[in-house]
Amino acid sequence: MLALDIASLQIMGAFTNLLAGAIHWIPGLTGAGRRKWAYYWGSGKLLIGGSNAIILIIGFDNTAFFERFLNIVMMIGLCLEVHSVAVFGERSVPRPLIAILGVLLLASIGLMIVDAAEFRWSFVTLGLARGFCFLGIMGLAAGIARRERLLTGWITAALFAAVAPIFLLRAGRLMLTLIDPVWTIEGQPVEEWMIGVALILLTLTHFALLQMESERTQAMLREQASRDGLTGALNRFGLRGIEAALRGPCALALIDIDHFKALNDTQGHATGDAVLRLLVDLAQRELGAPGTVIRLGGDEFACILPDWSQADAQSFATRLAERFNRAVAATVDGPLYPSLSIGVVAGPVDRDLDRLLTEADRAMYAIKRTRHPEMPRMAAAR
Image (cartoon, rainbow, N blue to C red):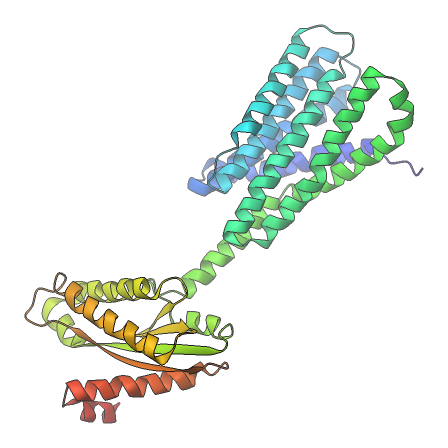
């Protein structure tokens, strides 16, 4: 079987842990909120990398007691890594994992105190701790990826899912070796390859959380760019983002607030802003999760109603107008109370949303002309 240079891989692992620890730890000191995860992740990497480096420098057989102590330090570093992922995802470390790691840590301390002839049992506890910690990180990363739709989260979970069994199997093989020496002969080449693969995969995980944070930040920026800062509704950029996903029948309601300019002029922009937010809140409640509210500009909004009929959309418009009239009375201090003009159309989208917007605009201004005789001149000027 092809031999591996395990010593070189261990040196590389110690160096990359120290490098990753320094990169994460220093910015993490001044971090707040979610950035605090970098402090814990960097601290864990420094403890693990530093312990590995010391062991490589002094040699494995120099002092069993000191090596057991460094194994405990590495276990603490592993616990910090798990905690950092929990902080990153704003979750708690699972209680069963805390219990398992607590038992393994106490066992390692006991092995350090007891001057046993066979000190390799401390490597068994360390291997088990690594395996269970990596399983915990895998679960936390998968949860983050599922909630926030992060591809890098799934990649991180997959890497730790591949590494965790290697350490658990290696710890189990070492236990068998201590129980029956025959396993040492049969398992040594396989064990070397297991260690080598694990070290290479772990190197790929050192900056996994930074990649996840980068993807999270990009998603947040895209979300902010597609939202109206005042009302939280989608803006025109956000509308174009969802347009390609629209298929089949769709209803569209175009909403305009009557007397909105006069309201701003007489009662101030704070009142006008409150009315805009009120409208979006009421519309989203009436629509439910499938519907989408878009602020087209000023006091003009659109509601996209996938798979709704003309009758359903008209019923929605009637309910929204009635609820708005009742709610606005508590927001506006008269004598001028705004109302809604809502134009409703329905038909197949077929990626031609502009056509529905144009038809809804005509329907909305037809309603305005009916309610306000002066609207024909305003519509013509428009």
